[in-house]
Image (tube, rainbow, N blue to C red; front, top):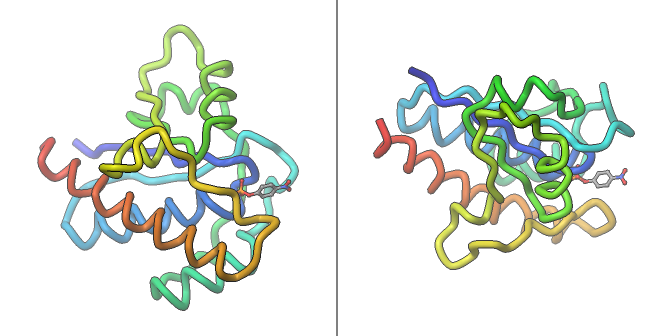
Length: 156
Ligand code: 4NP
């Protein structure tokens, strides 16, 4: 059966769309059946495409087109719909814990908990940064998602 993963950041226009693209890419490359989505804890950008800088960096460094992605906010039923809900930073992790119904079945973690040596660390928000911050963000998220995808391979 497919594993399902929801990537979560604040706006769903920078970090979590990159994580969605990276995990789907690695899962496909490894021939795995993984359902991937992303969402934001905030609602400011609902319906918007990813930030132009995020679109540019993932196209240039990853060869992936994310222009069709649209931001959405995390919903309570996500805690039952997904096996894993993965937060980009501690603020979002805390918000998710507060939102989580008692009956939640999803496993909550930080993305970098899956990257050996980076456990408990946050993926820094590049929104107020420059191109170099977006490049750094993509490389980190891509590395973590490759390892995460491989862990699903050994799970099944
Ligand atoms: P994200 O970045 O959480 O990685 O999508 C942000 C996007 C927008 C805002 C903050 C962070 N904002 O304040 O609008």
